[in-house]
View 1 (cartoon, rainbow, N blue to C red):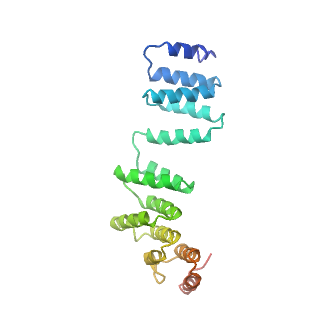
View 2 (view 1 turned 135 degrees about the horizontal axis):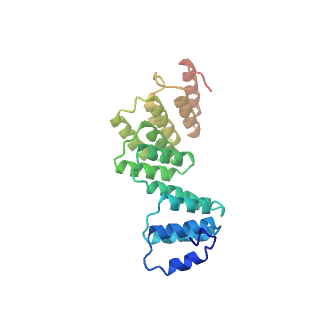
View 3 (view 1 turned 45 degrees about the vertical axis):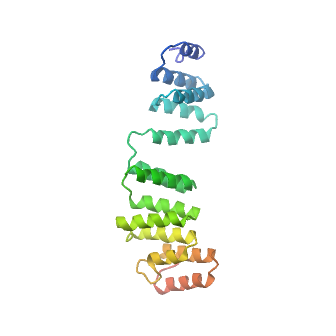
Length: 229
């Protein structure tokens, strides 16, 4: 009542003298601070609520996210975003895929790999697209050993025949500098070789100072009728 009437100063005093605080009282205080422009106090109260062991609801998240925006606290907002994910009652294949894909596209490669590991440990079904995103993070970090482990899982699940998965494997090995493994995914004379996988090979050979093989790959691409971009 005090918060909604524009008297947020009374609300925290009353809150402090309350012998038994519950989730509703915490949310009321956070919402009151937010609605009255006392954004930093809203954030501090949210942190205290978490420290008290209370699990935030969508209303608490809504108020505290709105408070972080005027303060320009983008990093705090991101932490809230990920915490919303952790608080989801059911983290399914779609939500995990979105998180891993988002981490990879935004350059948070370590977080992508950690999320994939957690997803796997929780027994969530892993689709081809998740492997592609995770392989992208492996390539960026040049961790071919992790990529090899993913490759093994891909073979076991029967995804190796999917062209876009093969492209992701070729690109991962090329970026990691393992050109032998990169070439073995499709092979230059493979009918599955396309402009994407061939470009990954060429880039890999250039990065590893193997100019002759890069040129040979380009010639082979032309021989197979693949139009270079």
